[in-house]
Image (cartoon, rainbow, N blue to C red; front, side, top):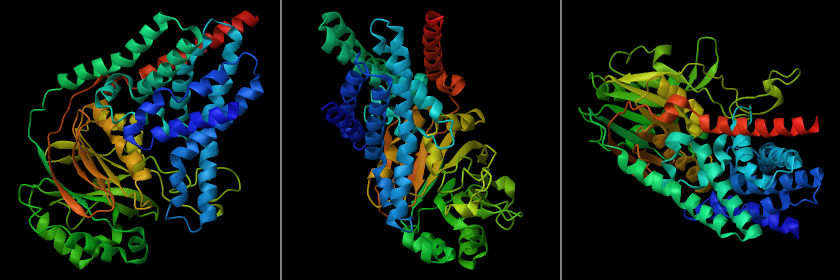
Length: 494
């Protein structure tokens, strides 16, 4: 029976990640998992089993869409990829169960209050591993609550994850003790972040300064078209679908999504004519996703900046190469292991970039990142600290035709806007393209699987937030707390 409750707990938490309307499920869905983790009669091994069951169920319910990846040559390979990813991510909850099993030996009263710190520590540390990423963070279930989300300006997303686990712990504590004092603390903890977030939201003043006029092109080119058409045909299709009067003399930037062009497309006559006619003035630039091959025959997932000074001759200084590549999709993370060459695993062979490129467009500093780089707060922070005033994400989620993956992907950009109080622009091939203001409001939006153009006017910001300056200090404090508790346990054993 206990495993049924654990399965239900994980499924409810997973469901909260799929629809922003049901993020409130996260506020109590951990209760069965906490109850069984805290059971005094369960052994270390039993808690590990619970961690495996909860973690596997939660993660597969969050990222089950990997099975429907249109880029996979066979369904068997898609299933293997999904199960491998889920098993790797399940290490998160195995470590959580393991750490709690160790700390419970301290026999502190209400040791379950250490769980928020344990959870945040594991969430944070796992993002630094080769196959770790913040996509499955509990915090991502809460982006619909715009006042709550404002707190990431100080705590990052790990403050939201901490709060979710703490709410569950307080409910569990009240269930055990029935003390009104616990109920009062629960209500205060539940409401306080919404109040502080309300204050932070309304504290934000409109940014003063020159605006950037952007044309965001969502061409909605299917994966099949990108695969079987010559890239120059795809580029011409993108160009022909741009409304006639969208690009004007007052346009600052035109945006094409991830891998919209290839390096050899720049020599295509139709593309060259388009570039010459639209970008020969001193004001207008094109930022486009591009598959780039350098002089050493290395392949990159890149962004190119085309403007009046480099129409006929671009160089490496006009290009950003993606730094955070998708493991097993864009590169082989095991290539350094003896005997495991790139040919052994049939996935992408892109090379990692190593430069935090900032594009200067009409004296405004703009950072362009590619695809799931938008989900890494630490990476975005480095671009901010290199001077970025606007964050632009170039995306191709055309591998998925349903909302599950693209919606999860898109809504994480809300946190990036709030963490750094920067406008965020999202240019996606099949959607979801968006403009997000520094309060986290989605001001313009193009739906999934639709073709269109967004004409956006955004004001760059150079504000330096607490998170931009100090990073994940909240998560680091939690790690230190866990080390202190482990130190106390070690001292008692001695």
